[in-house]
Length: 91
Image (cartoon, rainbow, N blue to C red):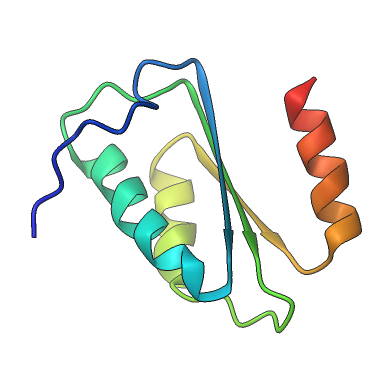
């Protein structure tokens, strides 16, 4: 399956993505396409990935994406940290 590069976020200055548990799967494809594709990407891309069991799927892949791009991925295990980070990001 090929994703057509019309994410809507590509023209924004910053993009925030929020995923929890198995809901991370679609973000994996989107982030890989943003990094590997020939798309205009936002200056800031930040993914908040919450998993209360701390079993972060695709963690090795995401860590490689972090190293090879300007994408930030925050692994979150509790709501308090998540709320604090979202408030900081929105200011």
